[in-house]
Amino acid sequence: RPDTKTTEWVVKVDKVIKTKNDSLLMVNLDVNGVLIKGCYFKEVTVKKDGQKYKAGDKCYMLDFPSQKHGDKYYPVVWFPVSNEIIESVKAQIMEDLNEQK
Image (cartoon, rainbow, N blue to C red):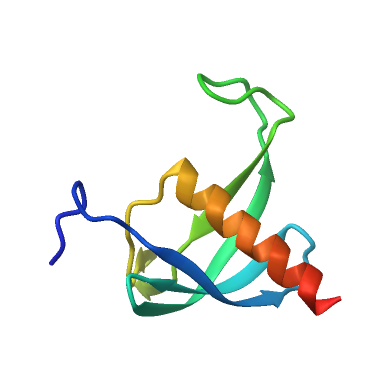
């Protein structure tokens, strides 16, 4: 098990799948050589002012695949996601979508 504080996370977008919702994409990620299928990358609009974002700002979230146990969903896999990783994933997604046109 890697030390999440000292591990360098190399994240590459392997595949981008469009959904019917324009603000939601399904992505497969290669993380340090491990393929994670079925992640969701979504654009959200901030509803209330916070410490970092203001109401109306757009930000991006990465959701990992999950399984239901009882009444709750738990991630099957995860790694710490920094703002730098989100920006890198976003740039790779935009490049992939431009190539699909």
